[in-house]
Length: 406
Image 1 (cartoon, one colour):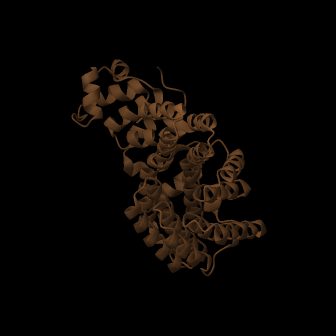
Image 2 (tube, helix red, strand yellow):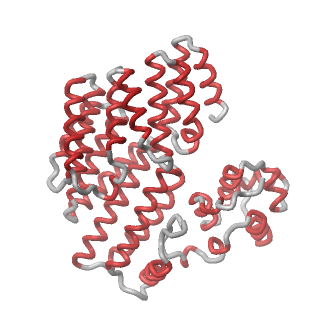
Image 3 (cartoon, helix red, strand yellow):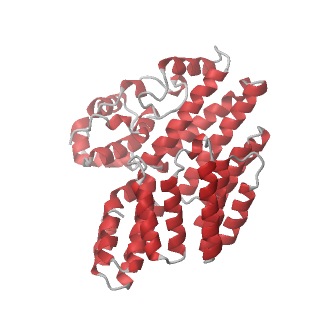
């Protein structure tokens, strides 16, 4: 199968090419184009065992001839391999429109030392970070995290050029990067790394007087506690986040809803729903939300209430709220749609509607496999187990479908 026209827009593939990680490049290219190793071998002039050896790191590409055959055979964009990393101003998704030509030239000049770091340069970095956040919704943290890590290092290297108010802006930007990296580590179920990044983000946020981000970081640590099944810690961290000086209304709403989810995890329904109602009132009066809370809104709150319903085994309430939440999620939110879709399948299974549970699970199976591991993927396995325990034949169908992609 020939590659799709936009296959080289994929950030993981572009990152592999820019790093000349030929094994990773072949593996990702095959996954995106659904090609066999034999097909790749035919395109680049290698035998299938050689392709396998390169992908599995048993063979390194040291020959200029083989390197060029891969570039030509797979259509690797020359801008990715024609220059080394020293020529790239800042690692980015390299998506059309993410960085303007003038901004790219400015960042390259700052990096080389020919231009001074200025507010316009930091503005361009803000644009890059916002693009990464949006891309992660669709592509998942596994694809985006390596690029954001590389970009973080570049931004950190520019801090020494900043003075006065501009230095505070760079520290704030570093705090936002650390918060995003923490979230992606958490999304990959790597709690120790997530906590390390959260701590760095919190310190930098306080250093630069960024109370809103400090509160966000504390709230996300509450989410990490919730993910680990620790309801009490979730409540305490959520309350601390809500009380942080400088927190905006939207950020306080996020913190209060985390308190509600902590109470739901502890099976305290009255406290849970009271906090969720409070959070919804707060967000209803909010004027502006920080850029990292771009997903906030009625749909998101409906989904959160559905999560509380699941903890409290209110299956009908969970079905209603999760359905309402999913209806408002854009198709680009693949990771979130996979997660809440898996939770909706769980709610249907709890309600005893096995057919609806299976249909819902199969509807998000692809996204859960591609961008929803480990959380959505694990939730679908739990759904399959629940259906099997209840004697529903749909459980075997789901388990077999999961096994085919495991």
